[in-house]
Length: 191
Image 1 (cartoon, rainbow, N blue to C red):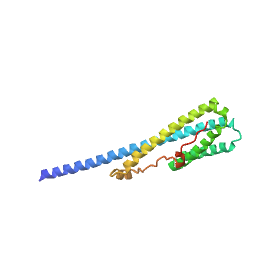
Image 2: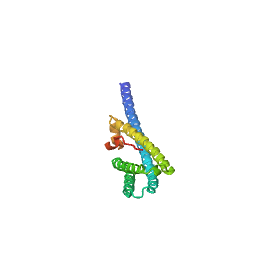
Image 3: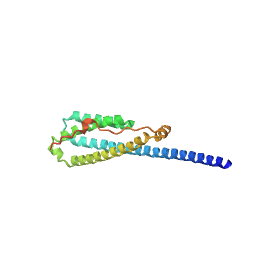
Image 4: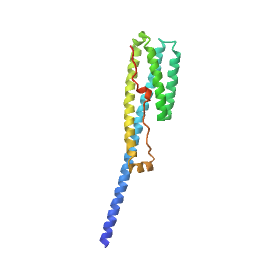
């Protein structure tokens, strides 16, 4: 009988050890996924900042040719400030909204540039447009990486027993970086 008791205690100890090991492994995995989401979001913020830093140079270049377009320049400045404020607060929904407004103001600025052939031929304007295009590509990749990290984390959090561990660890689902429906339309480009 003593031998059976030791076997039962051994099995119970093994099960307890396995459950604690599983909990620790799940907890650590969630922490890594959470950090991946944070890191990916930091890259989105970096690219938004890079784009925001390029815009004053682009605006100043266009201003030299289109001095009577003050409303557009004011809208760009306001949208840029709103986006910077939203990024500082870190709320994904507010950043989505501010980014949409900023993108709209930027497209209006570029539309004005189309009316000035000598501006389109200006080397500094062309270089700034290339920089902006590169930044937009980097931003698209950063948003995609962020959304993939969110997908992985959110998918894990929704499964059992990971959802229990996530609840204990205080890790919550994250919001995707989404594009507004109006931005999904194909833009018209005129030369």
